[in-house]
Amino acid sequence: MGGTRSGKSAWAESQLDESSPAVYVATARAVDPGADPEWADRIAVHRARRSARWETVEDPDGSVTVGIVRERTDVAVLVDDLGTWVTGLLDDAGWARDAASVAAARTDLVEAVGARAGAPVVLVSAEVGLGVVPSSSAGRRFRDELGLLNAELAAVCDEVRLLVAGLPLALKVAPPREQ
Image 1 (cartoon, rainbow, N blue to C red):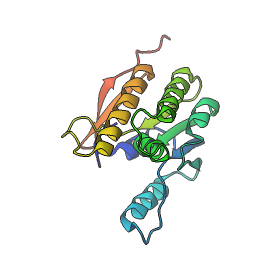
Image 2 (image 1 turned 90 degrees about the horizontal axis):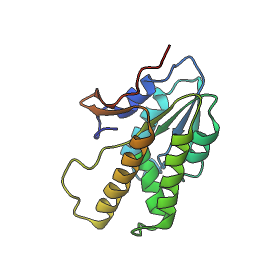
Image 3 (image 1 turned 90 degrees about the vertical axis):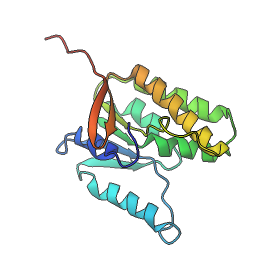
């Protein structure tokens, strides 16, 4: 996890072996490039950086992310980014406070990550709780939901890194494996 433009995605991608198969789950909702060329450019940069050996699954409605984490234990899975995943869930729930669908999706993802055995899963997320309290209800809702998700995932993950200025800081490191 990390702040905006901290290098989260590139660092997460570097944790995968480019010569090995992996599943890259992209959660951003693409838009008409004419309507938002800057967002379209961001998505294009991410697409171009992915290894040709990786299977890309674009999941703009968030419907397959949890299933892939749960079922594709044969290969590494990278989910980029949980912030856009949460945004999609909130969009679909009409940004209603305490929407049951958002809480259920969060629980499902945390359980899938916690139960995962086999190849690793790498999750990219923003850290949005370090700054000013957003002035809008939607901004506070997003910050709260993503903060809850990050905390719950950190509890079940073996390792957690915070990217600051492109530098990965270890927040939680897996104990050494016994030989």
